[in-house]
Length: 174
Image 1 (cartoon, helix red, strand yellow):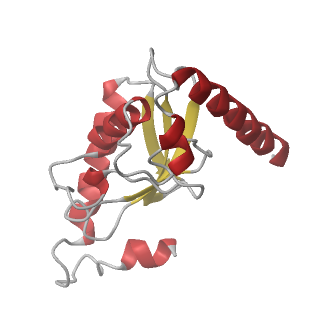
Image 2 (cartoon, rainbow, N blue to C red):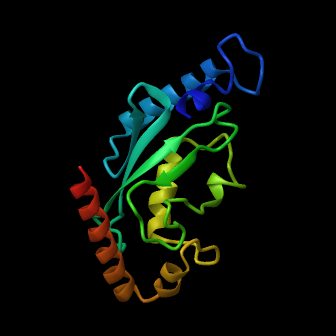
Image 3 (cartoon, one colour):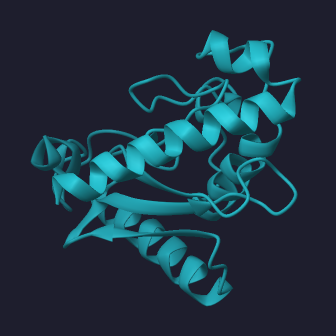
């Protein structure tokens, strides 16, 4: 799968597609440098091994939200025509949230119909971190989370229970 994603745009001499692999690689390297220079410890992402088209991200919940202090891992997969197509981003740490389903899929307009080549990994991470504290309950992937969101005390109890279960099972799997 990783090979197909990385080579889907053709080789450096290929004229197929809107964007050559070399320009996508250059863009991703530039975004990686931007992230490293930002010094933001609450929203990070780095390539997984040597594959520049697959990254691992980490988000820490913002202060003053029910997610404060909780840390989530993400997978970021970039298409061969990035940035003209959005990356595929999923939570790999189970995330109880109105806009995240049980498989880690995220309902966020800028990752779908509102995508723009002007967005970067950094802006996506900031948007996801913001989404944690401000879900769009009009478009829920998790109906139960959306239903109890308005009762922040109950929501936080369920969230912390599910987070503890998810991180305990991840720790025991290692």
